[in-house]
Every structure is written in structure tokens, then in C-alpha cells.
Length: 386
Image (cartoon, rainbow, N blue to C red; front, top):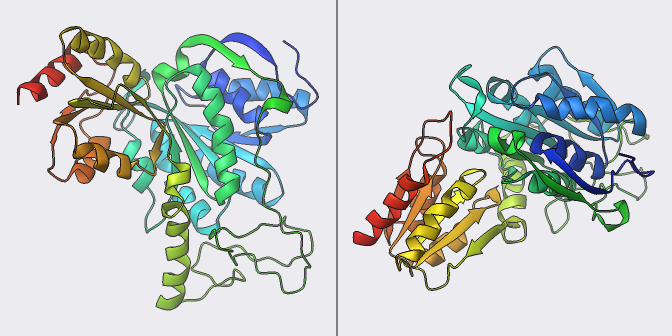
């Protein structure tokens, strides 16, 4: 395998989702990764450690996940595209720095290859138990973006998208794999570098005098500069004004945090992505994501063979949640079936959006394996019977 001058290894390969994620990050322009080995995400940083010396990147194995999640933010302010990679307990340790990245509007990517928990749990086996933590794990009010690939190809594609969204909205973006997607090997097609759409960093190109690091335009996203370029910037996790200086007042809190939330909420229509299959005219819609979206296919096929009108809505963007589409469907369908490898997380968002207009049936799974498609089929049949 030979990389082009931009580090992109163009061609078709049989690689697992972790390796595909690493290649997607490289293709997106990531050149700094800090991480600490933890199953089942380790293969990502192993690939990065192998590839980065050949393309001018830097990988640092830090002493722990806390150090990793702050190192990438320093790298961003030094001008690099940066990422950290973890799973399970490591993801929990990173939550304070996820909030810091949101508060300081530091564009970076957190990759979480989910495994069964809580605590050490089942380190080498799958789960989808970090979905609410991804959205609400840090304290306070903020907004992030989280993407859910269901194949190695999407691990590559969505890694690129994660970096693009991070740069576009100056926000931390989470890439939520699960162990199955991380470890399955499939064909992954990597296009030439000149065919990969890359969102550049939103650098300020105006005068240094009077520059305000956190002054946003109409899209609510401010430009950024590099430390050391003469702009005398101040970056803090404290509530701050447009200069970046701490201001300890309710008015400052309202102005800043409202914008941090609104820059995602008000752009949700442009951010949210999902895929539908036979949703129009359906009586029942299965809502799924990650590996569970593939496990649900035999159940959907069996139900359709028996004459049931069943659609499938797959979340690609988990956060922000596609609330508008679920609300719209809730006025047309009899019910929703939500299989998750947890005891009920994203199903709560479905219930919130449905608001009692139709039925919602969770198909829970504690982790360690994927669902038996028969259980998903049984839930579809149960909702149909009422």
C-alpha cells in the first residue's frame, strides 16, 4: 500500500473499521493524535502510529485518557487537526475535556469504540451504552455532534465528515463506533485525495488590531487563529466575553452559552443525516444505528415477507437527533421499534419526539453480543397487533 503526497492510500482494501477510521482521519488532514491504549479502540492508534511517521504526523501515547483529551486541544490551537481515541472507562475520563472543547470552541474529534459496561465490563465485546453520555456526559449546557457508522466504509467516510463538521462549527465531534463495526473487516474504497471534500479551518484573515476570538457572525460560529501568530488570544473554560476574557455575570453566561447551543440547534437541519428504507407508507418504523441497523435487516425482511408495512430509519447523526423527522413520522405510523445494545437510551429521544402520538417499543440488549433478529421481528409483530 502506497500513500499519495497527502497521505491518502487510494484504492480498495479489506480492512477493519478501526483501521478505516484511522485512514479517514488521515484523509481529512488529521496530523496529531493523542491516546491511551484501550480495547476495542487500540487498532486505530496502532494504525496511526504506523502511518504518521511517513506523512509528517505526530502520535503521542499519553499517560492516560485525561492527558490525551487535553493534548489534542493544545495541538488544535497550535494549528493542527487533532483527534483522540478511546472506549468505555476512557470515554468517561474525557468528559471534562469534552466540555472544555465545547466551551472554548476547539474543533477536534473524539472517537469512542463502544464496549459493554459499566466499569471495566466486557472490554472486547460490543455495546451501545455511551450514546447519552456522548450528549450529556460533561456538566453544564453545551451542544456537540455525534456520528454513528455501521460499516468500515462509513468509519472511513464519517471520520472525514467528523473533521469537516468540527471545522465548520468549531465544535468537538464524536465518532461513535461500536466493537462490531470497529473489528469487522470489509471492503473499503478510499478515493483519491482530490476527490475527498475537506472543510478548511475557519482562520481569520483580517487585521490583528481589534480581533475578537469569540465574536461570531450570522451563522453563530466565530473564526479562529493560531497561538503565536500575534493576536494575543486568551482561551479559557471560564465564562468569557468575545475577547476570551473571563466575565462572571449571568448576562455573559446567557450570551455565550446560548450561542454555543444555538450554533448547533439552529443548524440542525444542515447537520442531521439519516437513511430511510421503505418508510413512506409504512405502518411501523424501525429506528436503529450502528451495528444494530444491520442486525435489524433480517427482521425487516421477514416482516415484509409476511405482508407487514415496515420501514427503517437509520441514524447516521445521533446528535443532534432528527427530531423533526421523527415527529413527522409519528403522525403517520402506528408505532416505532427501537433496538439498542443498551437498556434504553436513544429510544428516549424517539419517545420525546413521538409525544404519545404513536407507540414506541424498545428492544433492549445488555451487551456482549448483538440482538437475535427474531427479537426485533417479535417487537415489530407486537406493535402491529397493538
